[in-house]
Image 1 (cartoon, rainbow, N blue to C red):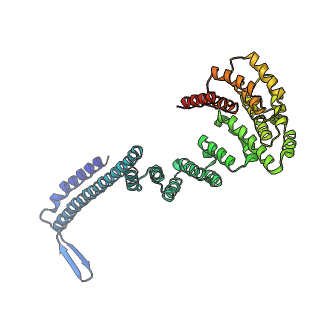
Image 2: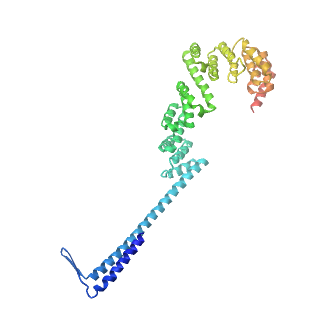
Image 3: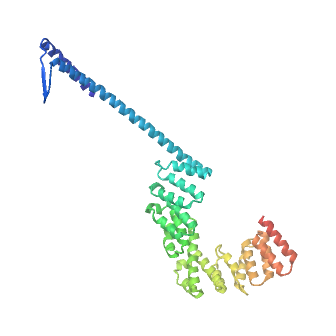
Length: 390
């Protein structure tokens, strides 16, 4: 469109010149220009020639200036692109060096890439290299710089929380996680670390209150933490208030928790720890009326009773129903041994070792035979346990 306008203007000028030229022949006329003391007098034709030369000069100068400006921009762009390529190359090299375990090279390359736009990932690389080199202060500084970028904040804060937990500072770990956005705090890495930090700081009440909302994220770990909460709460009561308070605390728990097998296992463990073996036997057998439970059955090994007849009777009943169950024979051997019935213990453990030899069972058999002055048998069991360990 612009070219068309230029052509029309030129054609119009040519037409005007063709019409006006004949009338100007022989009549040059003159032009007088006065500016203060400056006086310029010339002919119309000369003025026209001067204006024409001025216009042509202006076009030439503007064209040269425009091209020079474009060349300058292109040159700057080329140098800028070269600098960016160099920074990117350093960034990729830092990641490669980190994977190769060359911490010095990773640090050097990451430092060269710091001016690049990598959404904080370059600082994460520097931090990982610093951690590997044992430079905690540098790692924390780099991670905090990475946390300024939204896309790197989660990785940075989670790493800082892990470092705090590794140093036994669960409170600091919780502070780091609290700086994440609500969306980031709802991610699996953040939730798992928060649960661990709450447990390590003995904040059992808060952990129990929040654990239900984390069930989907925790998956199989949910049951483990549920039991850990029970152990933590019951251990806290037992250590601070004693056995009587422990029983009272248990009786006042909601039925849902008293029927939870994790809570039951934790309560039985605390009864054994408090020396309340008769009470532990009673509850363990009561909770296993319908048959042995994997989380409760091993706890019977801890019974220290002179006459654990109810436990032995229950175990023998279960063995009749499942006489190939190695664990049942092992538990019976422990219960009998703790009660001083070496004959029954030896018989049960011998059967267990035929079904599935374990170092635990072999060492207990060696101890039984040593007490009975059967040194050769004891030595044979010790050697067998060592061979099994290899």
